[in-house]
Length: 191
Image 1 (spheres, one colour):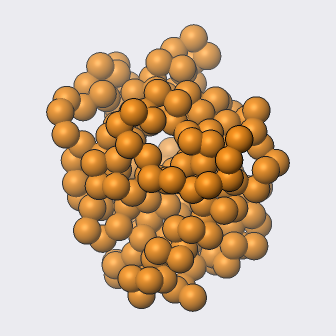
Image 2 (cartoon, one colour):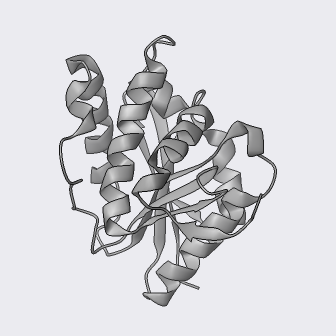
Image 3 (tube, helix red, strand yellow):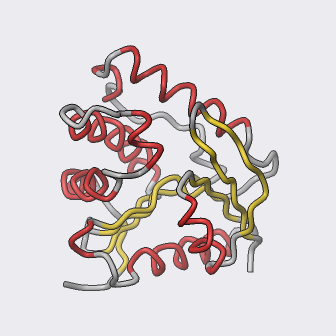
């Protein structure tokens, strides 16, 4: 297994989605959006599929493994882009769509007004945790943001992640309530 960071392409979709569905199985946001154990795998696959399709077209998905550890970024240039083709979320039930829309609305209204690179997804398949791949993917994205002279921004609802991101140079710049979730918005200035 290689630790090389590579740009993901459409052929990586299945492996990336499988890794993220497994990585986020106990994540507070994903379990709020998709609380039912029976439907979680299918709904989370559609959710991550939409995020992947949007970002792979913009060439802002990087992986190690390939596809076993994943970072999906938005840049100011691709932040508003929609994925090509149909929206995988169209097949989700209305209540799941409503939770996604409410969460997105709350979080995106709490993000900074200035341009930034946005770390939308960072996850490593549980079978491959502890290899520091997530840290390597963060560092790679931070270098790219710094090359553009821009800060990096993320949000997390997992209290344990706040200190992890602080060690990468992020600081809490906002706290939000999204439904039952406490969400921390974090920013790291360009180095």
